[in-house]
Image (cartoon, rainbow, N blue to C red; front, side):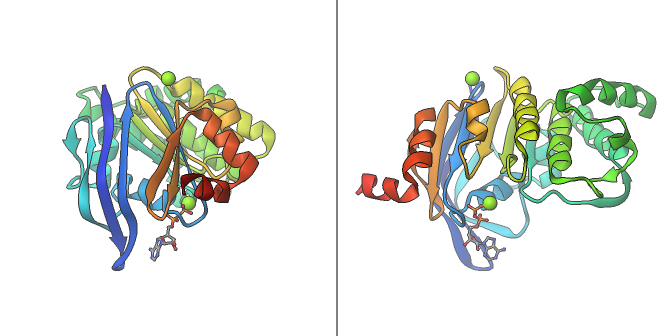
Amino acid sequence: KKILEVTNLHAAVNEIKIVKGLNLVVNAGEIHAIMGKNGSGKSTFAKIIAGHPDYTITNGDITYQHTSILELTPEDRAKRGIFLSFQYPIEIPGVTNADFLRLACNARRIYQGLPEMEPLEFFEYINSKLPLVDLKPSFLTRDVNEGFSGGEKKRNEILQMSILDTKLAVLDETDSGLDIDALRTVANGIKSLANDGNAIILITHYQRLLDYIKPDFVHVMQEGKIIKTGSASLALDLEKYGYDWLKNELK
Ligand code: ADP
Ligand code: MG
Ligand code: MG
């Protein structure tokens, strides 16, 4: 069952072409890794899936659950089960994490035709999810991401993903800045959320996250497109030989 299909995608920001002919098919039950040098367009691709308004699609299409999403707002995409974690999560002063998570959860539930959760009911629900990412209940009453360490922000994102019945998760450098214990916690959290009905795209610069979560496919991105696709072992080769090895390999 196809979840995401990206066809000949071209996109630009401020007239600068960044994505140049990207093709990708992601089916339910699959975990994909996208790797590539800094500046190859990985984060841009993630932001385009999320519907970031700065990026203009100049050619191609993105279908999610067999329908083009190019005209959908970021909120509409989220309601439909697309979850994006960002390389640099934002802080939202004045909004508690619990309220933020409840609003996001209820927006998704309304779309699914489910009743909204009242604050107390939600508090119990979210508390039951905390052990998944090893977060303390005090995180719920603090403002969103404010003063959270890098690791706590990432854990909080996986917590968020866990309550949204995520069908497509795009996790951009979720492993960056994590110490080895936090990496294991976050990786196990992600793994426990993967199921036959959803798909996960892990964008990562290094292969260490993939030691914990074995991807079904590894894609290498260069200059705005996928230049090679392989199995999990491709990530190991890249780690060993570097991206320039691949350049020669493809010649
Ligand atoms: P990656 O995540 O693979 O490191 P990015 O998607 O962040 O790469 O960036 C790809 C390229 O697009 C880079 O050269 C970057 O400078 C450029 N880029 C991204 N966003 C913008 C922007 N808003 N304005 C101009 N250039 C941008
Ligand atoms: Mg699988
Ligand atoms: Mg990036």
